[in-house]
Image (cartoon, rainbow, N blue to C red; front, side, top):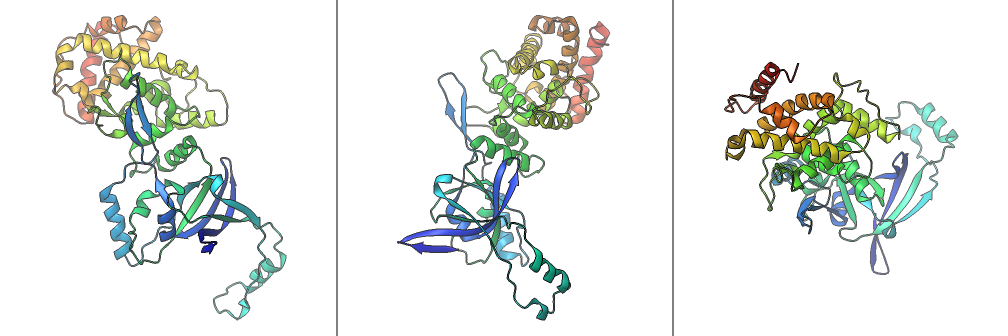
Length: 405
């Protein structure tokens, strides 16, 4: 409810307090108008570049999609049975709220007269014998604009218009004083398996969390590849999956990160397993039960040597640029397409496996292997078939040269 004391408006909520590993959270409901007034979304955007050439980002939310906003608006205004049963998740600062644990006595009307009571004896027993703490909390905060930061649910809320007279209560889950890192991890975890959120944004947000994970490591490696002066693919990667005002980019961060998983975890399923192991503060091992092959650079991932992994990738791409200069410099270069990236990562993995055995992952060693490649038809289909076509040409010739078994 909204109430007024000394000419200042407040919101008062009775919440269910929940205890989870991340800490306490509070579940309640708010009218859309109240939530619309007090909340804001912090969109993740590139804001500039620092003196060292590092990109500066802020925020955690994806950019609001006007198409998605129109779809939701049509849904809430025209669909007779519109519903949003899942919580909108917000974060409130502790200095702006009061939390008071309360006891709620169970008092019921004469329910036995109600015709829709199916189990009156059970209801009566519960009312007479429930001695468990109610875990109810009174939460009060000022009715002010932009006091609550949306962690998840900005598109649902954007479907309403400030002038609407729709009656629509929304389930709300409230966190208090979650750091930006934790907010990013909550958003990433919730949305990582959903198609509405770009994978690139999910990987970007895992990159700003404090906790170690394959996702964070892949993000850090991608950042080096995209920003290092030594990297031949500098500014080739679309952070957040989109081009920026600073550079166009050719492939998405999601594409790069998924390929990096092959080097450190093997695949996404093993990456999730590794993340669980690290969250328990257990030690990672070279064993990868969800990956048939041991990832060739896993040792460096375990040792937290992301810079070494990035350097190996840079060495490979410098070698590719050196050997295939004409194709590299072409405006229509296959190397600048997702197909080319995926194919060349497969080639790189083969050569890294050999390099690990030889104890040599230098640029010179990659050049030596790639020099044995003859003619390559780079005019392949821009599809998964094209990935296999291009990779097969490289693999067959390297195998004939004796470098790969």
